[in-house]
Each structure stands twice: as C-alpha cells, then as structure tokens.
Figure 1 (cartoon, one colour):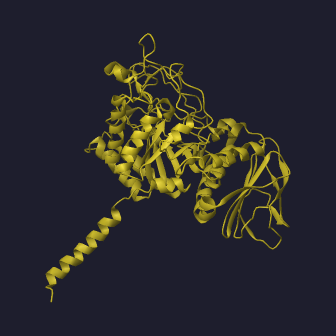
Figure 2 (cartoon, rainbow, N blue to C red):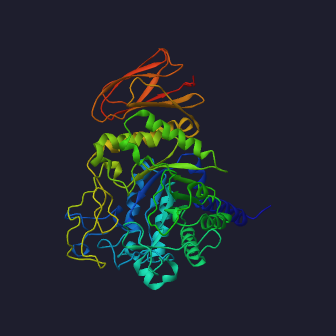
Figure 3 (cartoon, one colour):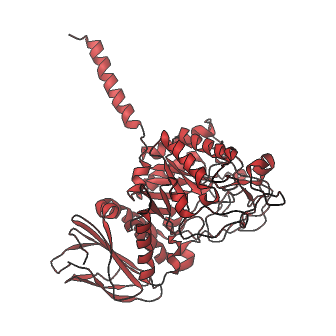
Length: 515
C-alpha cells in the first residue's frame, strides 16, 4: 500500500502537469491559414493603444501622454478576440533609422538592425527588458488563442548602410540603390540564384530566430520578389525544420510586375511560390475600381486556380485594405468598408484588416506634413501619406467614429464561426444575376450554405433577381446581413433590392448545388 504522502505527491504532480500542459502554446498557424480560417488584424504597436489626451493627433510624452508599447497593447487584446480576430500581424518591430528619415519617429520599414527590437516600443514604467515585454505580449495573445505574425522588412535604413555598406546593392557608380520613392531606405543585396549573399541571409536568419525565441508564430516578408528564390528556399527550409507550423507569408501578388528599381530584376511570382511560402496577396485592393460582377468573380476564380498550380497548399490574403492603401472611408464611405468585411468573411480567402478599419478611421492627421516642435530623427516634419495609417510618427491611436462598421465586423466574425464548414471547406459557386453590377455567390458544404449578394454600384439602387438552383418556397433561410429590404426566396430565385454598395448575406441549412 502506498503511503498517503506519496499518493498526495502524485496527485499534485498530475494536477500541476495538467495545468502546465494547458498553458503550453502549440503553434497551429500554418494549418489555420491553409484552411482559410485566419482572421488577421495588422497593428502598429507604436500607435495601437497610444494615449493622445489633448486630441491633437501626436503623442507628447512631456505632457503625460503615452505612445503605444507592448504592455499597454495587451489591454486591447480582449477587444480583438471578441471581434473574432485570431491572428495579429505586427508591423515591423525592428529598430528604425534616424538619418535621411521620413517622419519624426522614422518609418517602421526603415530597419537599422535585424537582431534586436525597436527601443521605441519599450514601456517607460516597466522593469522588464524589451524582450520580456514583447514575450509577455505574445503570451497574452496566445492565452486568447490569438496567433502572432511579424513583418520582415525588405530594405535597410540609411543608418545601416553607413555601418555596413557591404549589405547593399550598388549601381555602376557604386552608390546604394534607392528603391522607388522610398528615400529613407536602401536596397539590401540578397545575392543571386547561384550565390546568395550570406551576410544578408544570416541577418534575416537571426531575425527569425529572435522571433521564434519570443514565441512568434510566423512572418510576413515585405516585397520578397526583391530577393532571389534561392534565398527564400534556403531560409524557409531551415526554419521549418524545427518549427513546421511556422508561417511564411509573401507580400507579393501574381498581378504585380513593376520593379522599384531599374537596377534589379524581380523574382517571378511562380518561382517565389515554389520556395515554400504559404500565402500571398490576392490583389483585392482593386475592389474599389471594379464596376461589374464579372471583375470580382473572375478574380476569385483565378486565385482558386492559381493555388492549385503549386506543390503543397498556397492560400490567399484578402488585402482589400492594408497600411499601403487609402482608407475605404475616403474612397466610397462606410458601404465599401462593410462590403470588405463581408467579402473577407465569406470568400475562400484569409481575412485581413488594418488597425482602425473596424471603426472607419480615415487616417487624416491634423498635423500632417507640418513642421514639428520636436523630432526624434533628422526630419523636422510630421510626414504622412494622406488617408493611410501613420507609420512615420508617434501618432494617435487609430480610431474612427463609424461604429456601424464595427457591428458588421462582429456579425461577420460570428457567421464565420457558425458557418465554419461552408466558409472554410465549401465550394465557391458564382450565381447569375439580372444586373451586371451585382455579384452573387454561394459557399456550400454538406447541409450548410451561405449566399452573398452585393451591389458594386455605389451610386444607384439595384432591383435584382439571383438564380439560385434548388431553392424553392419551402426552403427557409436566416438573413444574416440585410438592410430594409428582405430578399424573397422562391422557385430557384432570390428577388431583392440592394441599396448603393449594399451587401446581403443569407444562411441556409440545405445544400445549394451547381447546375
């Protein structure tokens, strides 16, 4: 017979082991993404939970205001979880350059180092190290089942060039390459297909090792076409060896072909996909320009076909609105934002949003491009891109006033959970409509179907008939998203009226078959 003390010891050991096991995070991000189940929310830690008390748009710490940091960002994680966000994309957390800089804090994408964290993200009242603060943020994300992706910049700052010029591509006059109009950065030299640049490779390798050390679940490589395929193939293969669920996303699209410099040749998209990247941009930022349903539907079909061309799985990021895009509010108002929400939720893609989108921020900053009273770089002006999230200054928290968008955001998140099978596993079936400006499609799996109808005409109301095979008057549906007019479902057709830019979503519990 075992002694009571030994028995209690084993009971405590079992309980503590169980608790410990429940607190261990196991990365599943690659599987989540390849199932089209990722809901990604991109944030700039510098602004994510910044405190702008006097509402002038700029964080002035000498007045008691607080810039965003890893620790105060934790307070907003419950908000993201409630909205259905399951993945956070951190815009670059690397230190930023201060020479030939853009903005009073420097661009997030002008990396001055790849093996340490940006000291601007340190909480001034914390005794933790910066690494410990980021690790705590990542752990708090994981407690809420939120995965973490970090951006990997494609260029180096001018400061880094001055320190290590051998890392950079030179022109025939031995000057470093300034890509496009990115005047604050210089182009890193990834080498060639036959001989990669080991110095740059090791720098990227160290960055990913640091991210893995801090618990990060994946990276998004910025403009990866600027480096040879051999560079990425080696990097992805080596990092995946010990972490098979670590996600590699490419900020690249099969539709992009413009080179940022005449001195380089872009790596072709097909070669880039064969290196092991798991996902790419679907180029959905063009939604604002599409006038006909066929433009949207053909684009989706192309992405579905393209994903099947490569060995292994490749999935699409719904890049309708990113930090590089002008706010939908400025383009076509709240209706475009709501359309983006429902397309993100119901198309066979991974949802992607930028901070401030969910409340309709227009990203207009009062002090934009005016001379600053104080700067932390050699730029004396509050440089910003109008209508885009500020990545150049210590700015206010992104926050709009359109809470009707937030309501749709939450509703779409709930639908994605309720109709998970149809929206992650289901077929994509385009449906014919009586109006060229109205798109319609169904997502079908087993006994679940979701039908989405949208009006790409943002000026005129459309009375439309949608051909929906196998529907009849006995079929019941749940209207998930409608405004005033309730669609009439009968005899294989849906009759409805759509306001300018309106999207309607119906949820069925029967299968809608292809003709």
